[in-house]
Length: 194
Image (cartoon, rainbow, N blue to C red; front, side, top):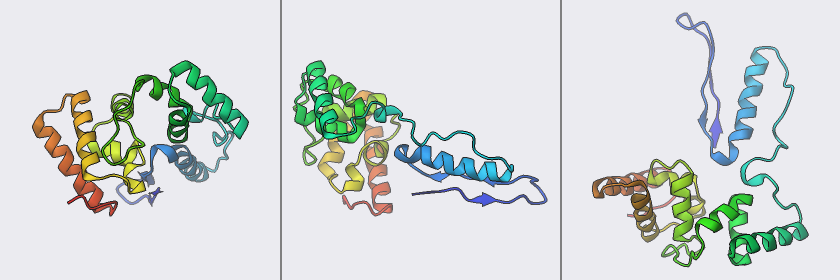
C-alpha cells in the first residue's frame, strides 16, 4: 500500500511538498508514475513518455506464453543445471533473474525449516544482492514469506542466521534484528511469532 499526500504551501514554505509513503520494489514504477502525474499536473505539463510497458529487472525477456516458458526453463536448466521445477518456482518469484539465483544456489538442497519452497542459498542470494539492511527487509520486502503467511519462528531464526553470516552481524545484532522483525511483523498484523 502506498500514498502520496500533498502538503500545500503555507506562509513559511511557498511550495507544496509531496511525500512518498509506502510502496514496494514491485510497485515502485507505477507509484513513481502516479507521483509524476501529480507533479506534472501542478506544473501544467503533460507526460511525454511512460515506462509502464517497459520491461525491467526480472520482467526483461520474461516468457509470455506456455511454450516460451517451457523453452526458457529448458535453456535455464542447460545453463544452471537446476531442476526445471525449481527454476519454474524461481521464475515465478523473481522473473528471469531466476538464473542468477539458481547459479548462486547450485546444489541448493538445504531448505528453510517450514517454508520449504525457499532454499537457504536463495535467501543468501537475496541478502548479498538485494541491499538488505535488516532482517525485516528479507521477510517483508524481498520475499513473500511474511505476506503469504508461510513464515514461522523457525524460518525467521534460520533466515537470521543466514543474514548474520553474510553480513557479519554479531550475536547481539542478530538478537536485535530478530526482535525488531517480530515487532514489525506483529505491528503490521502479518503474524504472531510470540
